[in-house]
Length: 280
Image (cartoon, rainbow, N blue to C red):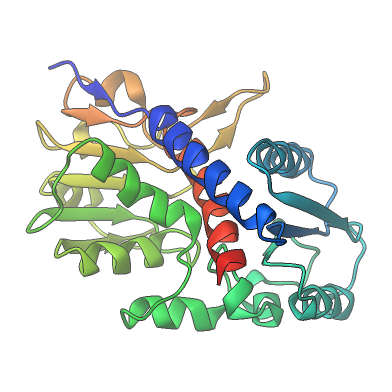
């Protein structure tokens, strides 16, 4: 079996085109969509991502402010900055970039982000509303998984989906989104016994575990769809996912690539959320 490559580039381009038009309408009416990204790290990959996000924002007509507090910033400083940005009427979206300084957690600090400006769904209030089926901005990566499946015509209703990973950023929110779409969801994690036996029973596998190429053909049912959320840096500066593409493609009907799969859709949706917040 030769798997179909489920690219996210075309979908991301479509989303960017739509929000470019929407942002232009807002600017013409006197409102420039504005995103604020707070960083408190000297991590090189994080700096690269924030820089690329700022460029992407500028390309679609969104103002993007990067607030670098430094890797030695304390928890109170970060929380205060998030509160200040949330209170500014001209700021429509606020993101706290990870990793964070020792002792700081995203779940704790994200409580300082106004839920109406929480465009990456990091505030526990946003996650609670998402779990309850109420309006909220979902974490963009989790939402990107469903958007990509939709784009490639994969119906989720009644499907068994195995999510490998239980983080509050991807695993848990994507499970809630899948449940809202009438999928049957199994969440697997580091303590799950007989993992491969569970994932082989699934129609769709979502890998979000942060372990390079861990998911091989033995984890996949023939004809399954494999969605790779992993972004693991390599020594040569590249990226690999949590799924081993060479072996997975011998078993799966479709596999998302890394890079070029979930990633570009995630960035586009973050910007889309910012424009939506500005419109409201």
